[in-house]
Image 1 (cartoon, rainbow, N blue to C red):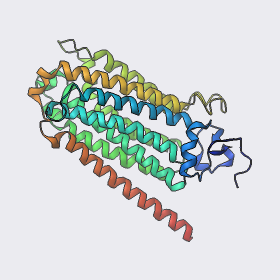
Image 2 (cartoon, helix red, strand yellow; image 1 turned 90 degrees about the horizontal axis):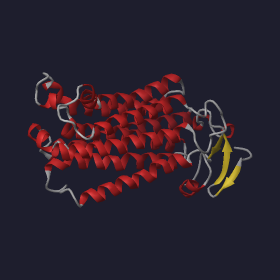
Image 3 (cartoon, helix red, strand yellow; image 1 turned 120 degrees about the vertical axis):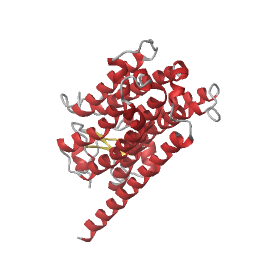
Image 4 (cartoon, one colour; image 1 turned 120 degrees about the horizontal axis):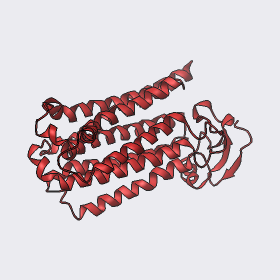
Length: 333
C-alpha cells in the first residue's frame, strides 16, 4: 500500500517520496511522484499533472519538434538524396530528433513497472550514445581543424581513426551506462554514469578544442557558437552532478526548477548552438574540407550510424534479458 497521496491529478494519485519504492526516489525531491505501477493511459495523462517528471518530459518533447522543423526546413534547401556531402549532416539531424524524444518517452513511461523503468532508461542512454556518434560524424566531415586536415601537424593517425574511436566510445557509453542500472545508488554510480557520457563528449570535442586553442588563419563564423555550446554543456554537467538547487532547499523545487529540468534545458541549448555552428561550417568550409574527405560512401555516414544503432539495440536486448532473468530469480527465491 502506498498510503495517502499528496493530491490527485488527471493520472491519479500523486505521492510523497516515502510512499513509493526507494529505487523510484530522486535525490532531494520530496513529492510529486506518480504511482510506480501506472498504466499507459495514466502515464500519458500525467503530462498535464503537477508531478516531478512533468517538465522533464516537456523540456525534451518540445525541442524534438524544433529539430524536426529544422530537418523539414533544410530538406527544401539541401539535396539530402543526391548530395553525398550532406549525408553526415542528415545523420546528425536524425539523432538530434531521436535523443530528446527518447528522453521524453523514458521520463513519461518509466513508472509503469520496475522493469519498464530500467528499459526506458536503457533506451534513453542508447539514444544519447547514438547522438555522440552523430556528433563525431559531422565534426569529422565539416569541422576538423585546417591544420590537421592539411597534415601540417602530423596528426594524420587521429584524423584517419577519429570516427572509429568515436564509435568505440559510443558503444562503451551505452554498455557502461546500462550497467549502472544494476548498481546500488551511490556517489560512485553517479560518477560512473556521468563519466560514461562525458568521455564520448570530450573525445568528440577534441577537434573543436583544437580550433579554439589554435585559431585558423581564416576567421570561420562558427567559432563563437562552438564556444557557447561548451559553456551550456558545462552548465548541464554541473547541474546533473550537483543536484542544485534542490540540494539546498529540498521540497521547494520538486515540481518546477529542479536540477534535472535545468539540465535538460542547458543540454538542449548546447545542442542548438552546436547545430547552428555545424550548419555554418557545412556552408563556409565546403571548398576546403571536401577534398580531404572520408564520407563519400553511405557506409561512412548513414550506414555507419545504422551499424551503431544495431549494436546499441543488441546491448539493450542483452541487458533487458539480464533484467528479466534477475527478476525471475528473485521471485523463485
